[in-house]
Length: 131
Image (cartoon, rainbow, N blue to C red; front, side, top):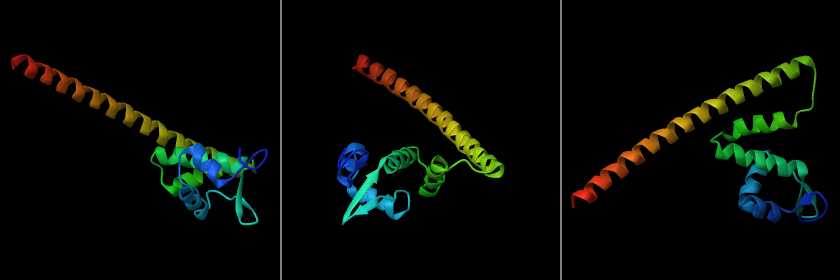
């Protein structure tokens, strides 16, 4: 932790998450993070830290910034009226289905890569045996 209990400086978060301060400022400019200011310094709280983790995970999973914003906003959403909750649950179902499809696609791609690697190793072994 950087500045005090439950707060971080931009350099602290950059180091912890392995990104640049510029990346964090970019996400701030996009409205994904909202640190408070103390003088000229950004002060990130636990909420910002969680949001940054979600943003970075979303990027690793290939989501667009708009998709990430929707997911992060869902995480932040306070329980509301029945209609809002039904909408949120519907959005969660959509995101969940998308992630499950991505997982299936990844599993299939990994299996295909394993098959190609096995064929390459077998062929290489035959080539070396024939030399």
